[in-house]
Amino acid sequence: MQSWIPFIPESASTVSGQVDALYFYLVGVTIFFTVLISGVLIFFVIRYRRRVAFEIPRPVAGSIKLESLWTVIPFIIAMSMFVWGASVYFAQYSIPKDALEVYVVGKQWMWKVQHTTGQREINELHVPVGRKIKLVMTTEDVIHSFFIPAFRVKSDVVPGRYTYIWFEATKPGRYHLFCAEYCGTNHSGMTGSIVVMEPNDYDDWLSGNANLESPVAAGQRLFTETLGCASCHKEDGSGGRGPSLMGLLGSEVRLEGGRTVTADESYIRESILNPRAQIVAGLKRIMPKIQGQVSEEQLLQLISYIKSLSPGKSSGIETTAPARSNNPSPGPEALGTGPADEQRMNPIGATPPGSASPAGAATTPASPAGNSNRPR
Ligand code: CUA
Image (tube, rainbow, N blue to C red):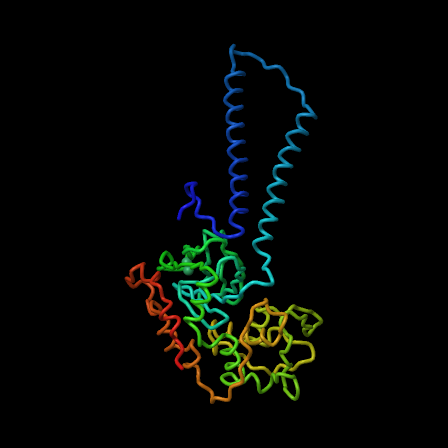
């Protein structure tokens, strides 16, 4: 549904009204001064035109009053834009603590979504209306940009780090999702939908896709079995060669050389992939690099497991409690993100660059494939 003003997409989130108001203010001020200045210009050109050849104009002396006026008024206008713009910016980019967390991984040319409850989607994101949603986003390859015009939110996803946006949808419906950063041949086809549902419908949707392994459980399996992290990082920190990761998320970590950093998702990510980049004070350089052994989605699973070891410091989501399991190591194929599985949940993934894939292919609702991908 289009808004009543042409060129303005529908407004369907708690911040979209604020963004529009600021936008109209900027446009209004611009139109006002464009009309004023051109009007005065035309008027003066006619009024003070040269009427007699060799006419010498009267000298003009400066006027402090006039100069102060045209300095102070534009200053106030410019500052009003700054203060208003900054307040909208902070409202939009400070992530609320009680938001429902969803992981997003961009990839040429699709959006892969993973819910903390285990549901996965491709090019679709189901969310409940009236609930704050926080997206933790990254990309497998190049820079993409996650853009929901109706919510007025957009954020680049950047290789090697996490970016965050949040929104609270105010109206149920289906809204466009675009990639807003040129990312290769099928950039224009890298679209999808945000499906905003009434809470009851959302619960139905969740339960219709239940019995999936949550990212926390998948991360724990990677941690204890596949990658064997748990042989050094014991849960209680006893006898392990590595530190306990209990309560790590959000804590201050002292590094070699005296620097301290906050252990956020990006810090944990780097410590997994390249542990020697930031050595914690007092520890030896013995942890092997994991780089190349885990996919971006597996990294998000590991991080959500490590987050689940810091109860209270997570972002308020109810994560499934880590389930003890003594199964033999399932191998990467069974983890849901191994190559075979990836292919199954990825209807357009094998499209080589430059091949003639119809642009519509990327918008094919992929939830059935995405949701039934659990191999066991
Ligand atoms: Cu992804 Cu453009």
